Image 1 (cartoon, helix red, strand yellow):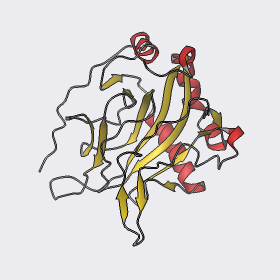
Image 2: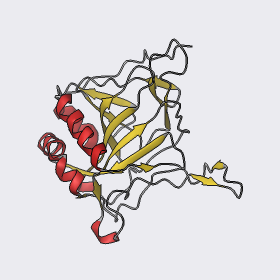
Image 3: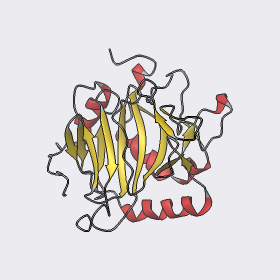
Length: 237
């Protein structure tokens, strides 16, 4: 079985990308040919995993993450803040139970997760880059998300904001669906605007699933939530 990775991703320039983030419309995903030197980010990722332990997400051992930003005022673990989801629970027998009514990353906008921890300081190059390109956009809840082979996330919608993805490691068997349309986001130095706060989406790492699906490889994305500074505490509507 070969997944359909043929959905074309529209390409935007920086000016139009900031307009999309400032005034989001109905879209799935846009690509910006950023020409980022991934070797720098892969070195940072290696330094991060050498020093820090990631947090399991959704009660599963195939999906984990660590935060680069958090909310100091909440007094939470600065590395786990904004990582957890509430949509998967365990029953009395320890079985994972999916609760579609609570599987959401929608967060209270008043609890701003934009304070950087020491990992965020290490990844300063990323924040400087985005702040230069998107001066009118508030950047928060940045995490490294790691999807291991065999993981499949259920369809869901996140907090009311766009997300900026930088794929660090991936292959063509790591697929992201928006509604029924599949997309492949290559790790080629581009960044991607994903409308996860308005469109139902899911993702899966199918690498190594069969002899035709390449070797097993974790999908590693650096992800920042983006919302216009002028509308930080308002809903999309």
